[in-house]
Image 1 (cartoon, helix red, strand yellow):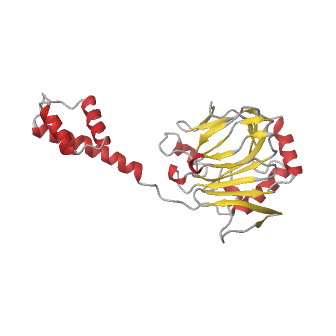
Image 2 (image 1 turned 180 degrees about the vertical axis):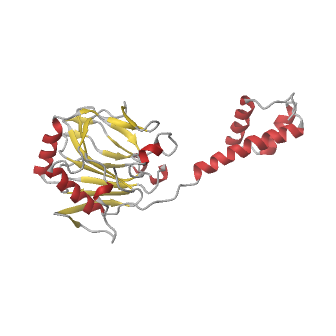
Image 3 (image 1 turned 90 degrees about the vertical axis):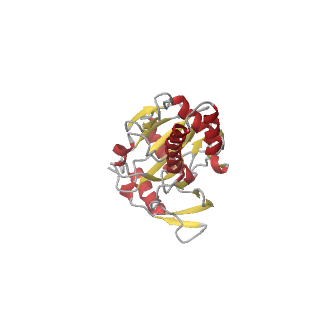
Length: 284
């Protein structure tokens, strides 16, 4: 390209804008020639910008490979499952995204114990800061929460064993149970549970057991109103009912899993949940 016709950020942005709008390269070339560009320089500029632009578009559309994920129903639909020490109802199933709603995963007594154990250890909930791997307070999450160490209390250990059996996934691949309390107005805006590969802190997070591949959210009480677990991509709302749980998996760290989900605001009362995230490998 000649010195009289340098590539500028403005020109690059203009070419991409024309391509995004659907204009063919020959039409863009005609516009460049009409504005005084040398033909060879214009062609070289178009090739440089459009090649990079198309490479980026391909990267965005090519899905990462799928990985194995937990599957509570490997042999197809059922109405009841035996999960370690307890019979659990299958209330609803969906394939894309993979969502299963279970009834009676926890007893009333277990729900009460979990709330009592967690109540004195609550703090403002944090999310993982994927740029660094550290935790931070996030305006999108307005609950209070705490983490149990894996197996730190008999009721925790019993529930974790039941969850591992239900999902058919190794117990040691699970993170510690997190208990959250949502008061009136509290919510968790739609998000993904996997760690975004594009963020610089993700590699250090994945050293502890690989990518997250599934979530199991258990409802420890029934709010008076609100607090559903929402899946916006498929317009699905799961009502929070004491003792019930919702399972969902995501076989790749990509929005194509349609695993976007959130906790709708609690309108009246409060909502308590216990969440188990599971990884590809052993979580340490």
